[in-house]
Length: 130
Image (tube, rainbow, N blue to C red; front, side, top):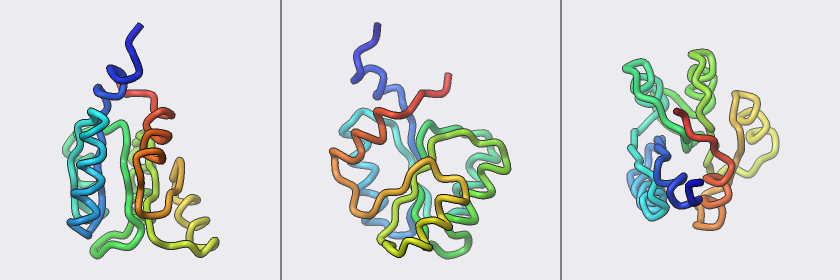
């Protein structure tokens, strides 16, 4: 049986955030866990990359972005049949905003900034796509 580290290292992630610093930090954290990651600037880019056939085990989705926000992108991805684990990551803390984001199709919501313990917990819940 594969060790948890081997399992995690087979995972792929898409980091969707308009802030390049947040995007790079989350990608660096994922890479430390052995997760292959890619970053895009907005929800439309996240949808487009899936239309082109790329698949990810995990999508870290920011809420507030230009062109297409995280709520719209999450709804669109779910409507396309994307079953990836989608975790909303935002600095928003208003309960009604978080609820609206969750109802779009999130699996989980986490407040920024993520830390290694939170990311480890998220990764531990993912079943890799085969």
